[in-house]
Each structure stands twice: as structure tokens, then as C-alpha cells.
Image 1 (tube, rainbow, N blue to C red):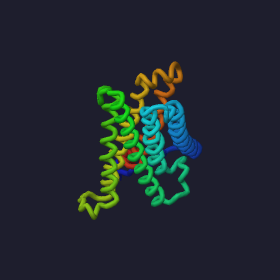
Image 2 (image 1 turned 120 degrees about the horizontal axis):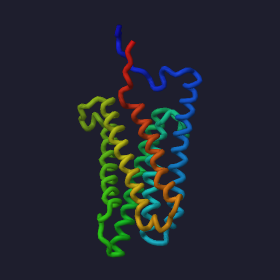
Image 3 (image 1 turned 135 degrees about the vertical axis):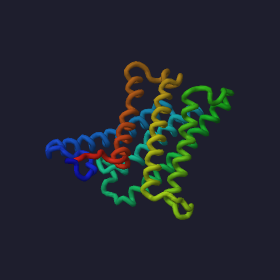
Image 4 (image 1 turned 45 degrees about the horizontal axis):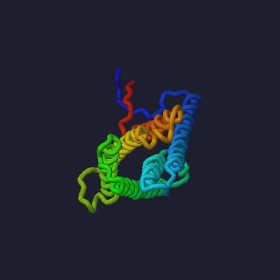
Length: 233
């Protein structure tokens, strides 16, 4: 007969050997996401050759914002493979807000250089899919940051939602922002500048690599905040 309904934690029902294999695979995935985020940032920074033009600063600051700072800001909250695993939860949260503040500053700077470059070259704004996705990503990033401020000062802002519900909203919106940023970054691979710089199999590697950190972030957020699978006995 069916009895009380319980929630099963991730990995429940696995044997000891399978459980530890699962744990280490998750840790390896998080570490790989850290490496890919940093590697993409460094590679794009080298390819853009900062200082050669106004536009050259745009890929640099945008990669720092979304490949590095946003990825690290989310992954440092993970229990598996985070370089800040020795920090307290409060310390992790503070580092998270610091990283998100860097995202805003770097993204705003990158946008400024792009606008300046377009104005100097007398080129129209917002005429490509990449530019439209980019401005949407920046707008949602700003809204998400406002959501974060609401979480810090819920009583001051007289918010009626409970803390767990606010955390769920914040995490869900954060996932949307990160996935939108990933799509925007992938669309940049189709730009004339990038296709003239990177060709062949290397181009395909650049196109597909951002998907891995996105999958790790999605898995982390869904496991942490979405209702766990129900089981019956």
C-alpha cells in the first residue's frame, strides 16, 4: 500500500560505489566549468587584442563579465568542486554579490566601448541578432541585480514574499540570465570579426564550449531549488 510521500535527495538509491562515482563526476564537472570559463575569457582576451581599436575592448569586458565573473559567482555557491568550498555560506554569498557587481561594471564598460566604436565608425546600432540578444541580456542582468537587492533588504522594501520564495525567484531568474548570456555569447561566434579570427574545428569548439558551464549551472540551480522527486513506499 501507499504510505507517506517523501522527497528523495539527489543520488538516493545508489550503492556506495555508484554514489561516490556520482559525487566525483559532479565535482569534476564543476571544476571543468571553472576551467572553461577562465579559458574562454583568456582566449577571447588574446584574440581581441585590447587597445588596437575601440571595439577590441568590447569582447574583453563582455567575456570577463559573463564567462568569468557570472560563472564564478554562481559556481562558488556549489558544494562540489568550488575553490571557495572552505568558506562559510555567508562568505560565499558575499563573494557572490561581489562577482555580480563586477558583472554589471564589466558589462556596462563593454557596452560603452561598443557604442563608442559604432559611433566613430558611423554604423547603425541594434541591427544584428547578437546586438539584440546582447541588449536583452544586459537588461535582464540589471533586473536580476535589482532582485538581488530585494533579497538583501526584504524588510526595508516591505516585501510580502517569504525568504525561501524570494530565493527561488532569484535563482530561477539567475538561470534565465545565465542561459540568455550563453546564447548571446554563442551568437557572437557568428560575427564577421570572430569568423575572420577563428576558423575550422577551432570555431566549432568555441561555439560548443559555452554550453558545458551552462549545463553545470542549470544542474546546480535545479538540484538546489526545484522540488525533489517524490517517491512512494
